[in-house]
Length: 264
Ligand SMILES: [Zn+2]
Image (tube, rainbow, N blue to C red; front, side, top):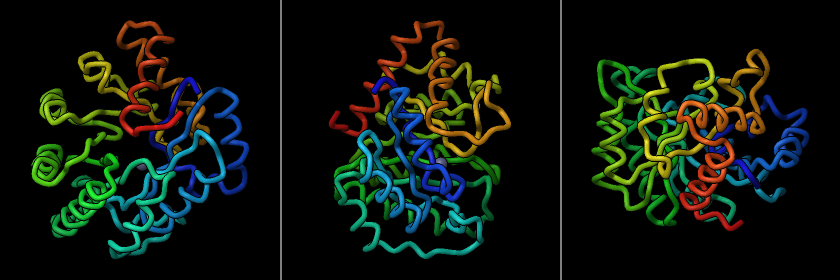
C-alpha cells in the first residue's frame, strides 16, 4: 500500500455494478480504501464490503443531513444508538462518522437534532476508542467549525479528522490545537481556494481522500470518481506544497495509519 483514500462512498448504489473492479483497480495501484457510512444501512454495507478485502476498512455513522439515504430517496432516519454501538465494535470499523454539523444544507430547526446525534456519535467513538470522521459545513450565517470545536472540546476523548475541510486558516489553527487533522478531495485539482490551507497546514495533520462518487479530480472530470483517483489528490497536494510527490505520499499514508491505528 502506497496511498490511501480515507473517505469515499463505494458502498453507494453507483458502484453496485462494478464494485469489485473498482476495488481491484485501487489495489493494483497500491491504494487502500476507507468506506464511509452516512446512515445505518449504508454503514452496515461498508462493513460487509470491508470484511471481504484486505486494505479496505469501514467508518460507521450518521451524516448530519439525516435524510440522505443511499438509494437517493428522501427519508428521515432516527438515530438508533444501540444499533450503531453494535456496528462500531466490529474490528473492520476504524472510525465513527461521518458525523458533525451541516448548516449549509439545513434549516435552523434541524440544528438541534444534528447536535444531539453528533454528541451521541462522539460518545460511541469514546466508548470503542476509535477516532471521529467529521463532516462540517458553514451556513445560516454561522461558523459551523467553531460550533463543532465547542462540542468536541466538551465531549470527545478521541481524535477527529475534518473530512473535505473547507474552513478558514483560523478554524484550522483552532482545530489543530485540539489535535485534529484535515483531509482534502479532488476539488483541490480544480479550485484554487484550498491552496493556502494546504500550504499552511503541518504535513503531519494532512490526509488524502476522494469523497467518491463526488468531486472527481482533474484529469477525470466528468467521470464517476473512485478511490484510485486519490493519487491525483496526493500529486496535487505535493504540487501545492512544492514537495516531492513520493515523500508526500509516504507521509500521508503514515498519517492515516497512525490516525486510524491501522494494522498493515
Ligand atoms: Zn462523504
